[in-house]
Image 1: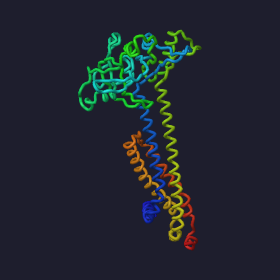
Image 2: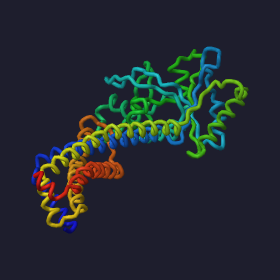
Image 3: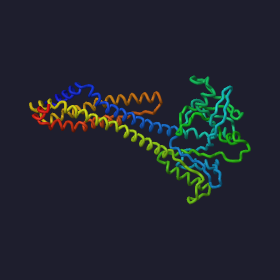
Image 4: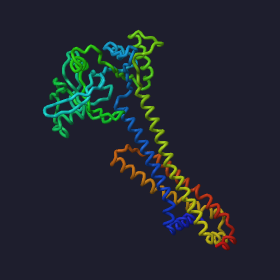
Length: 407
C-alpha cells in the first residue's frame, strides 16, 4: 500500500471514533495552548521591559549621592555637572533634584504631582518629547524664572477641557505652594516606569527655582542629589562610567582606595538583568506548560494501545493478505501523528485566542513569535509520534494467526 493510501486509512480510522480521538487530542490541545500562551507572555514581558528602558533614556547613566561617612549625603555641585559633561565619553549631563510631591492648583482644579528641578539637557537625555511648547532655557535657570514643563497626566488633571482637542495650555499658570509658575511646555505621555510609577505625573522646573523657592530661601543644604549622564554610545557605557568616577574622585580628592561618596548605575546593565530575568521566567513558564504536552502524549499512547487491542483482527487480516510490518507500524504512527497535529492546530488557536483575551481584559503584555509557535507544534507532533511508537511496534509484531485467533 502506498503512503497516500496509508494516510487515508489513518484518517478514516481516527474519524471513525471521534469521541476517543477528541479525548486523545485534549491533552495536546491544552499543552500546545499553554506553551504558546506562556511563551507569548514571557516575550511580551521582555519587550515591555525593553520599551520602558528605552523610554527612560538611551545610554543612560544614573549618578547618585550617598552617605560619605558624615551621616548625610554629599551633594553634587554645578561644577561637578560641568566636569561630567566635559568628558569625551559623555554626550550630555544634567542635574536633578529628587522627586517631591506637591499640591498643585490651576483655577478650580487641584492635583498632586512630583516636582523635579533640573536643566534643559535632562529632556533629550531621557528621550522626552514635547507635545507643545519647549523646555525652559539656560537663561531661565540663571534668572530663576518660575516656569514649568508639565507631564501628560498633570495636563489632563489640571486642564481637563483641553483633553482630546488642540487647545493650548502654553502660557497658563499653575500654583505650587502658593507660588505662581507659567507653563512653557507639555510632554508627550510615556506611561509607567520600571517601578510602576507614573512618569507623566511630573512637573519640571529650573533647578535654581527648586532650590531657592520650593525648598526655601534659607535652605543651606544642596539639592543636586542626582546626575543623569548620557554616554556617547552603548559601546562607551563602561568607558564613560570609569571616566565619570575618575572625574568626580579628582574633584572630591578621593583615591581608589577610599570609598566613593557617589554611586553610578548603568541603564544597560539594568536592561540586561531585566531581560535575563524575564527570559528565565519565560523558560520556566514554558517548562511548566510543557508538562501538559507530556500528559497529552501519555493520553495518545493509552488510546493507541486500546486501539491496537480492538483492531487485532483487522491487523491479522491485513498481515494475512500481504501487509508488511513496516506498513502496519507506519499506519499507526500516522494515526498518532494526525491526532497530535490536529490537536496542535486547535491548541494554537486556544493559545492565541487566550492571549488576545488576556491582553484586552487584563492588559497582559503579549508578543507571539514564530519560533515559539513552531517549537510548540513541533514538540507536540514529536510527542505524538513517540507516544505512538510502542503501540505501532506492538501492532506490527502481531502474527497473523495469533491475531485472528485472539480476535
